[in-house]
Image (tube, rainbow, N blue to C red):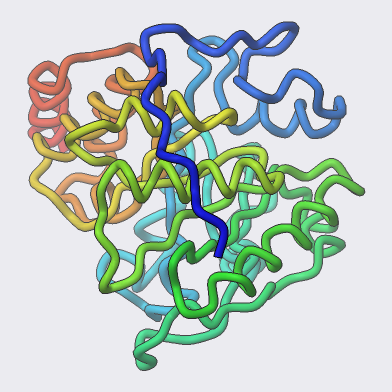
Amino acid sequence: MPEADKEGERYSAEKPQITPGFFLKGSHQLDWGMKNRLARVFNPASGRTVMLAVDHGYFQGPTTGLERIDLSIVPLLPSCDALFCTRGILRSLIPADSQKPMVLRASGGPSILREELSDEQIAMDIDDAVRLNAAGVGIQVFIGGEFETRSIHNMTKLVDAGLRVGIPVMGITAVGKNMVRDAKYFRLACRIIAELGAQYVKTYYVDEGFETITASCPVPIVMAGGKKLPELDALTMAYNAVQQGASGVDMGRNIFQSDAPKAMIAAVNAVVHKNAKPAEALEMYKSLKAKG
């Protein structure tokens, strides 16, 4: 086995990557159609996005908060920058007159009934993403998982298909049950996903060294919301992520499982797009919640 070089230390996190001619890092040389789709997902004014993730049912079924997408999620569409969902939910429940960009889950396979979740395949054809006017597609990549190589090849096949039609791919760092969620792991996973062609990466926040993850990834990173947290904790995590270089968030449970989802997504928007401090955003949440 070849020896790996010692992991780098010169991240220069305080120096933003230059993006000549386009507002998103690493995207200035993409085709017009792909840049146009990215500019629908990411707000050109702030350079960031608040994606609403509701794709959980593809392996979890009707999880809490997603039992009735028509009642819990459709009312939130005006407040998000993009919706991350499956094509089944898009066709069956999302109004076709919605102007929000849709990013579609493109991988699937095992359910929560299986012990090993990394045995995924590409679960949709890129032609269907074109038919659905998708602004992007997302796929899990299991770096360090049992089916690591397959998941990487799934992503690269999807990237090649996306390049043919101008649809960007969001590579998602999937963390297995026995993997350590630290900056070293996410630097590795995010960099591999970017190196192999994904136009942006979804990953988890870590308290120590997150700025080294964003600095060493040459394409935009959006922060995954992860498990449900108290509102202040979720807003603090989102604030820290964007202040440390993330280009937004892709939150699900911390919004739709909140006691007041509309108030929570408004508070997240303030943090991401207006740099509102967590305490300030929490007061906004409480005020909007009180108003019903």
